[in-house]
Length: 246
Image (cartoon, rainbow, N blue to C red; front, side, top):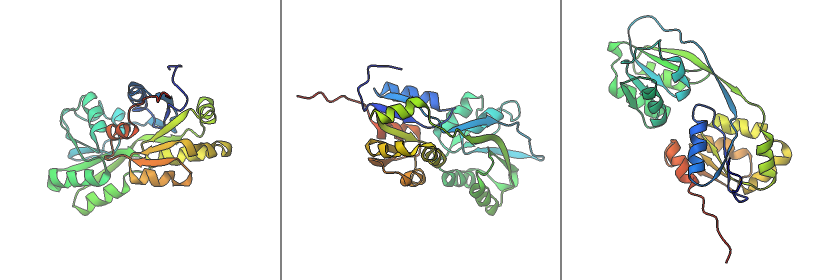
């Protein structure tokens, strides 16, 4: 990482891979000094396919995509929650990918509009404890839905020494939070003596739910992205321009 950034130009990126590396690069390209602070650890589980005729796969996160190639035909329709997840599905070789508006509610609406319960079941590829409301809404609309847990989500449980040092030195201007869970895990991992240093840090949240999860700490400000996607997050962050006195 660059070492010539002025104090206060640091940005914490709390999302896990996949997504962490590309966000670090995007933050750096805007002139900020990025710090990798992933709060979740993702593991992949094998996909057990349901029986019967399946008409589409639903994805609420790009974390699920690694489990699909070789198990799901590349021409199977994929309904992705947002553009980042859709892009990763295309990169994995899937050709029929449709993007929802970035939320589970938008994904539910897309499924109701595009799909027909008479044409086969749906597969929701997700993690344990996720997607329950979406499955309930789909079943109420008449769909047969199989939920498969294809990845695991575990808390990292600690912040690196470089993160704590940067906070202590006042080198952190902002922190990016891409989910409510990463927000909760960040605050849980923050030592008491470091919590007071968040008063100089601007939190950028991907959604109102994520912003709500950040409410247990005193931040300089909490900004919510206009849309639940990385582009809107980076737009809220803005481009770094050092202010030169005089």
